[in-house]
Length: 110
Ligand SMILES: [Zn+2]
Image (cartoon, rainbow, N blue to C red; front, side, top):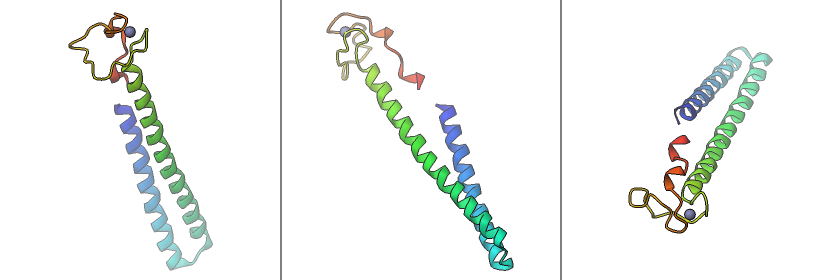
């Protein structure tokens, strides 16, 4: 979990840096009217858009993975009986087939 958040923070810092650099290039262009600053402005704007798109994609992928993982742990590993609403504290065995629920992977893996 910590690594995912670190990755997010890294991407957000890169986005903020690119936005800042785009503003810097725009201001430089206003003063000097050099075409190089327009090229750098366009380049850093494209990088900003790519990073924002990647951050959205990354967050969506992570949400899908989490829902898949939580769906997997809410089912019995041997008979796939739906265990939602059944706590592991009250039941250490599957009410359907009797398999041990401790063998089900923990949600803390993600
Ligand atoms: Zn079962």
